[in-house]
Length: 399
Image (cartoon, rainbow, N blue to C red; front, side, top):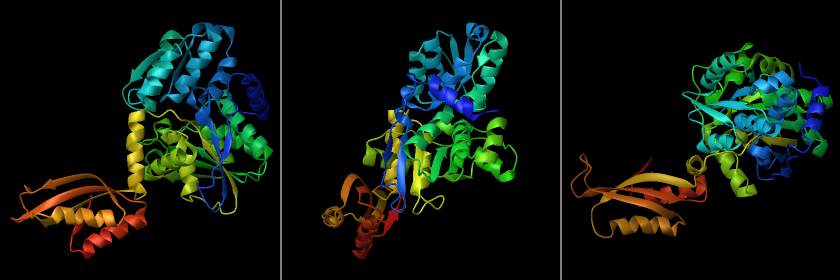
């Protein structure tokens, strides 16, 4: 069982290894409350996972260290364990879901670990790790369901309370439950009045379902851009701690996650992965009442593949009404295309792509279809542009 002494010991062990990450104010996240961001995306290896992984490694016996360790992870725990093993001269084997971002896989290899890519998601990588652990006698470093790992993650709470003693609400990402277990336990020991809210992606709400039903629930599948928290089933230890110390678990949509990522980029020049941004999304979209509260959002990691990031930004712009895709049918005559473009331009819209097609089979002779993608300031501005098009006789179909 995790104890406060373990959290303080972990804090001492991590000195000179883990970074005391900054906490920055984020006034645009929610105008009705005072929001701060704990930037674990700026942690060594780009994620909070180093904290728990390193503390667990520090507690290995000499015999365990000699045999080596094995871990499974979507990427962030992998890097934490790999770096900890490198620093302590221990052989590490890491099982990673083959769909994990390439940047995370290559970063893990760069720390000297033996990487085993596994078909499926985290739970499938876990099964492979268990087979290898039995075969070779490695010590398994669990990414969340371990007292030492949870205590290491709890050091985040010590830093939050030190910097923000008046904090009222802390939003924490939840996958298997390791980070929120350590944070919730620590906060409730030191400041019981502070609310701890867990946040999961709608497509990977295993802890949300488990807490709601009063018993551990396993999802048949998980689908989310937040690969770092794409966990089918929480641990028994994390479930027990969350049941006791976490005030509420909420979920956020893919569009809300993408919007939070974009907000962090635009307002703070911070890069967050999907798993890290769920906490900000919960505050942005008022998943609980935080009006007038001092709020801290734990941005747990920033290891996002750049190709995926570009798609996330596109989704966020669409969600916020800043990119609009639509089609319009118009007469195939000179000047008609120019007319529709002029309406958009005069209204302050910016055309980013256009496709003119007169070959659609069910289209009347003498007509054509124009597909447009435009930039607008927000939903209101976009609706104004679409309204002007309709007013001028164009039937607009959103895509």
